[in-house]
Length: 314
Ligand SMILES: [Zn+2]
Image (cartoon, rainbow, N blue to C red):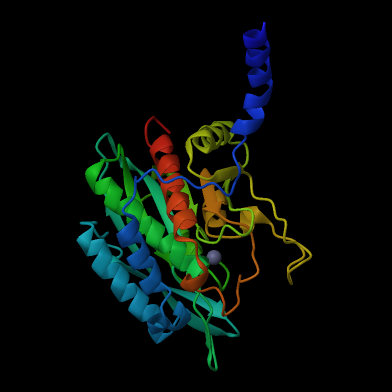
């Protein structure tokens, strides 16, 4: 009788005990955390001076990405020799030049069909002595993209994969728009976009979000499945606790980053990133404040999402 009662009590209590706190981060060791951190901290270092589009810091970031793309054995498109795709865009009554960094890996089964992994490398630069390092926004997404590239050397992809580090995102998604205006392959060959923007700063609630394009029930199901396997709290669909506490009053998440340029062409996407936070677009968005475990788990979660997309016909 006592045993039975005990079993009954345990049954009642177990589900509550199992409710995972978002503060519990577990690592799956599915990405190279050391090289991820090295790439991340270098991109977010003062050497890069906040990587403002058109600046010497942005050029240094591009040169670093060219070197890393070479190390990852990525191919270059004829339209982006040495991985560089230049483009023009209007700003403040003049014409500016931006430069994306683009490379690709050939897929084993659907070589003519492409998944684009995107992450913007530009940020806000410096104002006087104040340097906007842009660690979370978006050294974190670019270093994550490189980590996925490293994994894809060991585990081959059935789709071809384009790695797109965009410039001038902060000036109106200019790099992603230019990529879609002059894509290296036909629009019809681009099957999916995984956009990585701000993966490092989970805020007090330690949450990562994944938002799929509209009418994407299958993608939403994949996000749910990955959420059940992830080493951190992955929430389906961005929503913000911060609105009203920052200068922002609302965020249209579907237009908030480069995935929007793909969405306009009806290309399905998943956008992975954290909520707006206190250090967003301030000089305090620095690697010093980043919880390395959360960031690593976030990149491992992006890897789970990519694997889940990359295992069947799109
Ligand atoms: Zn960003």
